[in-house]
Length: 549
Image 1 (cartoon, one colour):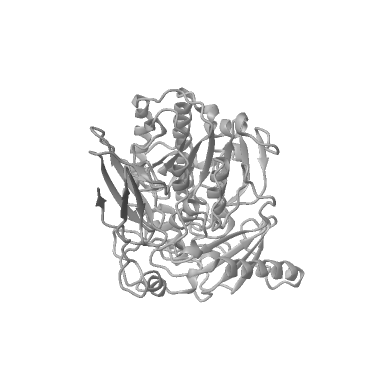
Image 2: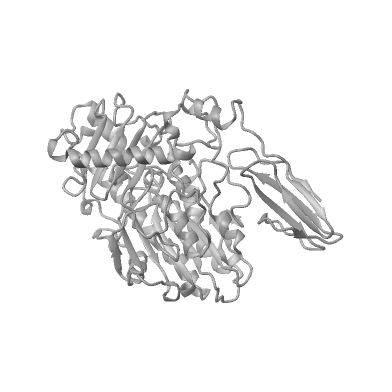
């Protein structure tokens, strides 16, 4: 995460430069193109969501042409665990991707793990959902952040790089493209500190849990200025789509990966850490009965685990049975809207904790498994934010008021119940109040049922979890080498490792293909002179050795 300033600048420059990329012929696909534009660390700070300080004309225009989803929740208040839920359709707590983070170059931050870095081993049936899109003929691109808590197989993306773009696909092929915009990331509050503010500090609203100081106002204004610059990048991407004649053939999603990258927001499972804005624009030709009209708001509950099944539904691809989310759009839309959202908080860098949350859209229940731990976590990374340093100094000097001191409480109750409608900051714990006993019992029961259904890897220490994932060994297993079975002019590919995805590159004559294709199970036709490279990879295992024909 140390290279975010460079990456954010590169994304902005490269998107403008992409006008020079060779464009495929205009396309009229049977399957819709799907575009994801995601930003980082941003609560609903858009004009379309009621923010009167931030100017976001491009996203406001998209919202006017699409539908605003007002109750969308991440499964964690930090990026990597939530991104693992997005790419798999599974709760991070159920697949072992709950700790922030697992893959990293720096020494592993906590003594509870015996290794510096690891790729979580997922259940054998679980795939990154773009693999299903590729098997169905989609061209998939990711520009560029992954951060899934595991190394994805080569079968997931046609392209995953700073240059990945739908414009690189073969003509007339439907695409699923992601653009991850890092400009709103927490780190950009200090990395862009010399840039001109687009929002005046005197115009921002200071939440009651912060002191109203010059530093606090400046950092909030910096974050909101980054939001405005992000909107300009969104405008560039949408303009490229229009230039290519694809705007009305493409379903567009915009959302953030979790709440604001500010103290007492990011990394929290309170609503301010989980709730994000989402806009979905579906061209008329792809709308089905019951679709909301353009410019409307949909207040159904949506969880990040619902995104994978929803994309597959919109592409009319069968939904794998293991998915823990449900589709909220498309022909495979769930018959019953979601009633509850679930989330978790586990290790954050060097700091251990374990919290689980369930909400019904108004009331939120929290189960604190480590009540002896404070709310505040001493995370070195966020000390780069000037206001974080100031908050700590004011705390130490005894200059924070009672509300501003709440974050620094030394312990937590075992259970919390909050009414997010009357108490949006979730300061008042209703769990001990008799008037709310029925709601407490309801949400407590929902929590128990959810944990029983999906499991919770957080109940294990990280060392115990890795021991299970690695079959009792001290290092990850390796995926078995793929087997190439030749019959006449066809080759069938197999792998003995359950859950392994198989990728291949087939070269014919003078062709020089370099992109790994996902093997869909059918024999591959080969001719004399062809060459075939094959690799297999189960998520969390080491990839197999490359086998050639």
